[in-house]
Length: 617
Ligand code: TNX
Image (cartoon, rainbow, N blue to C red; front, side, top):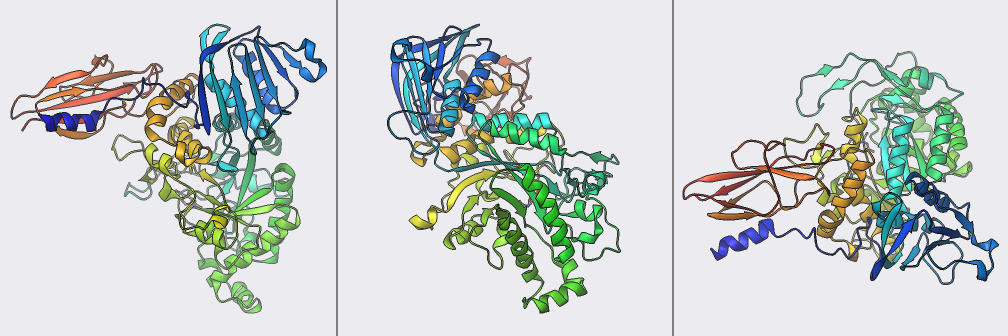
């Protein structure tokens, strides 16, 4: 009996859901939080005072209040002398304050009468995000904010989220929503994967065929390419691209939220869409090429010719105009060398440039482009393949094939952004091993794995570690044809990423994150109209337990959601028993009972079904 109790404790130890949360529900968990007694009451009468009425954080907060139906007045406190400043029912947002804060840091002092938020530039915006997360609506135009002192700043300066819009296209509204949710969780770099084999998605005025031809494919592969599904195509043309005006609109939208957009223009591989548009970019312009309609690597890549460098330079000139940020991502990954090996021009070039072989052409290509980009006052980021053959000192490496590339780049003094698939940062991987998951590219990257990732490899020395400037997760969309599928793969893993990118390691705690804070955030995300993967009930899992008497204790993974369960072997649904209190089950000697659960949210989103086999055999 003792053994059974112990086992139950391990398998179903009481959810910490209801216990007091030291992080006050904030995601990503702050550097430090002190709780006080009482609450600040926020109403439409609350006065917002600020020394920077035009700062993006202030405008964001004012807009938020307006959307919440409050429309509070904003007072420029630099125009008031001391006597006229109010000290009751006031929120102060200040950029000029006494004391010091780390870059992007903020401090939030919430008392019953007054809230003071001091922020170091972008820090003011992040303080506003935390403040908004703390607001608990009571009734229309009336909310409470718990009294506390929060001091906070990020662990990394590059906190990135990527979106592949080539394999599937996502429209302007979707991209804005994506940026919204990133900013709410204090991510600050949006890596926009704009070109690939299956579609060129950015208007280039000088090269109109890039979108006239390159943004369209005749059809798309159905089902998984790698799991032995039948080789079928949907026979449906697919297209989409962003005009330069739309791109400017998105860049400005991101900027208002302290997000830098990093455009990726892939080269020399993953370039079928461009080669189909302008065959002169290839090593054999006499052939005709088509925009990719399936996935993986394509052998026709850009030729390392002067013609290519001239065209790419002219394309990039338009890209520089659109994206004021420092970084231009030039891809560089997965470049098959077949076309180069077959080309007389390339053979000659290898001799002329004293290169070892066709592999050397990869670094030749990247260095040529890098020199051009540097001369235009931008820096390159590339996937870790750009390390091959040596790099100029200001290239930043995105380590995706594990951490190896990142480690060696940091050791050579390059900046590094960690984004290894093996670290749970490939959000095109499935979120569990269950067969109930939708089609994914492969792999398994459950929330807990993403959460546990630490971007700073222990093998790096102190000075080398400083080159790890941040972390990013990638959303490759081969298998995401809809907004709701992309949302499903993104959320809630992006919230775990935000904590990897922001929170000091010593403050990370998966149970506190997933059981105490996440359920409230998922309810908020549902109310905002996003889709997400509903985690299984807290305390539920696919497992086998042995014994005679069981107490199943659960909590919903989404605040306000219901847990339904069955003990009859059927998959639970709305018609089944609703979980309201711990369920006691007695299994007769020699028998087994299946306890199955599902979480269904107020909007009807459903978790996977879990099965616990309760065996008394
Ligand atoms: C590898 S990650 C790629 C992408 C694919 C992805 C699928 C990288 C630099 N290249 O082209 O979409 O795998 O997981």
